[in-house]
Length: 314
Length: 255
Image (cartoon, rainbow over all chains, first blue to last red; front, top):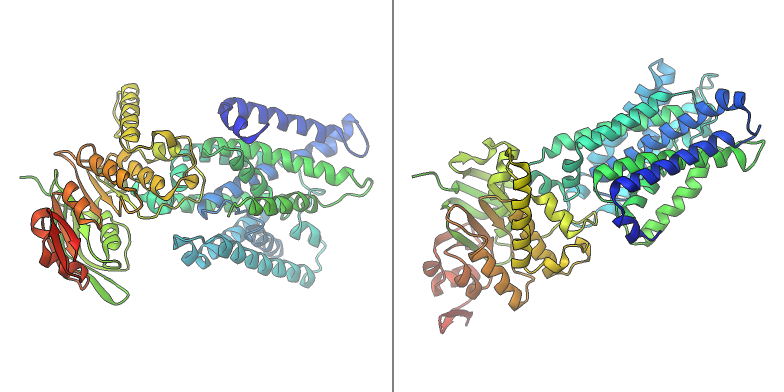
């Protein structure tokens, strides 16, 4: 369906259609795979994995959406800008020190977020086009955190640590049954609904939103904390899977969805569908081997990033 | 007598180590229409930012809105009192004109929900036709021309419904016909006995048509304020712009 037709669909219908499509993807992800259709197998192995994929996908999509508004950059994504890398380092440190994994990951993502905001202050304050600088800063942060992850993995040959692929690219093969992530995603959508109009106004610019009476500083702190929590939960469950927020939220923007409330709902649903589908691909294309889902996502997401850049999205 | 809508006390602003305005003691009363003049870089935009309460590099002195220090106003109440049209909109996300205007509305909360919505949409359609942007409402703001975007920015400022509008160059990109359109709206729709606006502008002929008062920034920290007839005079214009002026049939032109 062409973008302009899609934009005219009433929001409720659009949400219903995307919800149905997401359920269809979930059904496919549950029924397909090595071992075929086997009830015991589905319940024991696929349900937890598909649920984890859905939760992680929703959280990453919502984190991407929040970061895009926070940084006023439609190309923002937790993986591209180093938040996922920070979460990986935080989770590894948490493993070593015995702190709860997701808390370490969320703290790592928060550190990465604060670092990026601080480094990008001049770029964010300028009225001119700051995006390339912001993306480059984020890429360098991601490189630094990636190096730390690698060092930690090499320095600490601990049986408890999962492999390098898990922390650096992302992998769902060992994901625990976690309905918490789905619940957190739901809560996240509810919070974005609650703040919907304020976040919409933030898209007009920080000064503009403040002049309209929005508590801009508090909103930005909320968005940063929410995004960091979401990235922390997602990374501790599945490692650093990239590009979900970018593909999903920016994709819907290009299709003409601009209201935060609708954008959040659609992004959560299609983020879930995207990661479930990517994981289905990851475990079926090379059976009996399993590919890391993060590599599949990067193969989908990086070309999308290039496509958005080529379309003039900055 | 109630306090002026806007009042400055010993307001001083500096930028790049030089004074833009020093010891500005000035008041804007409801019903007045002010233009701010000054050469490029004289500090018109920074003065407007400071009046709106936005951060500026170096400032001292006080700005009061309705007799109360601007920093003592809660952010929500301030939105109902003053609006600022910036010189440059920051369109990072491609919203439509309609959506941008809807987001810019600050409607006082009352019990009559439905009636209020109807009133608002009436006001909105009057405004978009008065500013000649009715044909643009479904367009994306990043696809407008400079002049069109400027009129949309003015409409954004207007739908905020604030008693005091601060306008940074509302007609700099307007063709002659639309300078008239904007000027007419500023005199009729944009002004009322309970409201006031302060706009930076350059063309003395346009200013003479729309303003009641003028604040001249002389570029070295000195300033002069008064009724439009007193400030638009050869000596003040010469001090403001550094070139000679003459009046031809009542219209001021650089000599």
